[in-house]
Image (tube, rainbow, N blue to C red):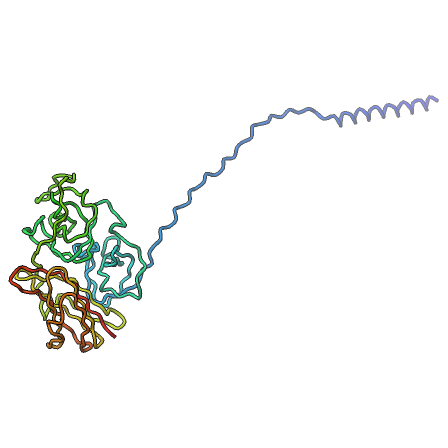
Length: 360
């Protein structure tokens, strides 16, 4: 019995120890943990997208039909940057508002560009290039004007001042001032005193004249307001045509027509008599056996003669201002066009446009 009691006691003791060990092992300690505030992850700042690239005009290829001056601006009053020979390939990237001038790529020019007369550049079609300058691109440096017909640039506001040069029809000029009556306008002209010159307001189509400063004969600004009694530009007075020293042996313009190139000449000139330049000589070489001659004038009438190989091609009485005449010619031989002022004893002046076209 004692043995049995001891065995039972040992068994019970073992069970109590195991229960204690089991409770100790399963007891979960209470742990306090610090909760830190959540850290905000900064969102990346938005990087602004670059502005879309400006459209770049695709150059349009053209070929010169005669020797051309390359100018800094679309005007014969502008600085000559260089000369391009005939039959030279050029790349056109812009035009003036009247499509009388092409802007071309020209390394020697400002920003690698220059201007040439559109009339003497042959293209496959009408170049789709942006308009540069004129009313569509005001620079703020002054109002603009378009020349109506050929006229003198003078050193002061009047015909008594020296002639500095000549502007041709459709030239675009920048206005910088006017005289007190508005009858003469000051323009930008690099070859003139202080880079300025003067033109008769009656020979230009101008905008913004009323805001131009009033400039004295000496070139000093003497006012900025518009006088209440400022009259409209007067009717142009008769002035002598500037001499150009041309002759039958040395024409003022020479153009050769090509089947795949230039086939029309448009020339703006002026003649006067008894004072001034009484005649002009223009030479064209057709590739066909007929040409169409058209003459229009502003001012006095003119006489036109055609000569080839020293012989007249049409009588004087057949060709006057307003004429359109088909003339038989010899192909590949130069035709001389002689334009002369009518002499009636009084001072006369005529600004004319001569158009010669090839007829197939």
